[in-house]
Image (cartoon, rainbow, N blue to C red; front, side, top):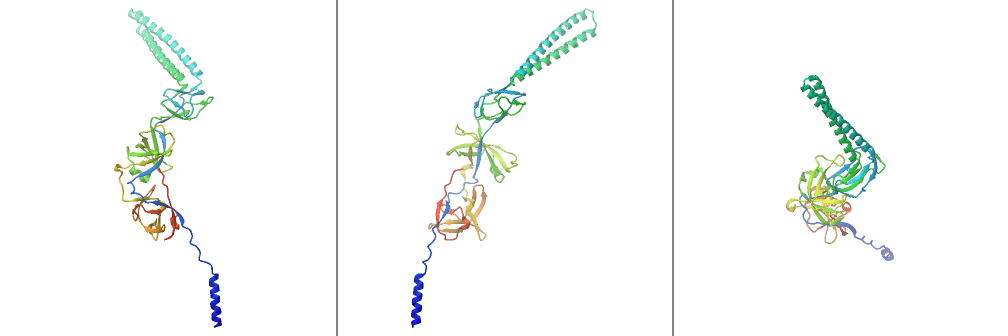
Length: 360
């Protein structure tokens, strides 16, 4: 009896000294997205760069030393405006020499003409032979050809004098300057680059897997990253016939139809390719990071009303650059985890953090 009482007392003492059960860990934060409306059919959003439709590289047409530059990067220029000048001393001397040759050739031509006139009168009176007249007429033809030659050379020399001035070939803005006063340049060497600002494009790289969806003159919606609240309309103007050797994507140019002063060259623009009638599919678009695989089945973790993670098998459609399409297994308004899905466990308590979506 004493042993029983002693054992009971010892058990009671040990039970009183045992540690309390551990507290449950706080809910784990989980980045979630609310499943929205059906995905737009074949909608594609890409990032591009604002480019001028026309951009020309200009240089002098003759060799020489630059003595003056009259425009800086960013300057607005008009067609025919002088941008830079070469030292024209040599070209002026060449032009003067050419004009002297013209005057000498004109004197020779006048003398040959007068000589032929006299010879024709003498031939008519039978004072000279026909061969003598032929010689004088040949000399006249030679003098005429010589005069035409030196006049052409004089015109070339005059043009080269004008080529000492580099003028803008279009209205636009100077985007690059590659020469400074004092520099000796060769004919054709790049001096400035001028971009036409009247027509503006957006250049995007389209993956080869989506090229079948791109059509000439297709409508697009453009949003600048500098002002995502404002949209512009555009149209596909040019599709590269071959992929870029580095990116393996196809360059597509889109003309901005309602461009304004807010659009600057080099800006980043989001381009959404519109579809006729804004068709909707029967699929939901979710981030690719939200999709995982459990026991060989495509699975999405749904966060229920009690903020507990529940795995749900879904039917996944094609992957796109902006996510993956889910054709079955989800409903609009449900919350799904979009980060760290490989670490979740069933019925795990989480603290949802709704993703803030931004425009492309």
